[in-house]
Length: 151
Image (cartoon, rainbow, N blue to C red):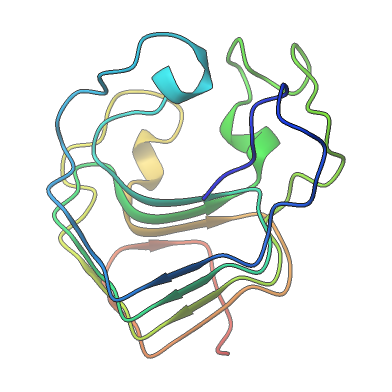
């Protein structure tokens, strides 16, 4: 789940659900060249990038080289790149992920081989950077960067 490219219509992107899925071994090189999608590294599980009210529940997210779940502010994620909010301001004003819930997920074995770059040191099962009102309960994970209060 992520914020749209700038040429999409201006509308609110929220209230998505990701329930009862398996996201595993997503470690092949990204086949897209260029743009924001092309900049996504391999080894990514579930990326909640600057969107609100996402419900991630009862999923198995395992063995992804970079991260299992990343909950991150859009402008933090693209900082330092050609797509940075300074170089390419988004049409939306709130880039923080807010009011997202993570319940009863198995998120293990992620982050063992992250790509080099600014987020290499935070690779793991959960990366939570930015936003308010986010919570997590009943999840199984080991390596966590950031903190999510119980739901």
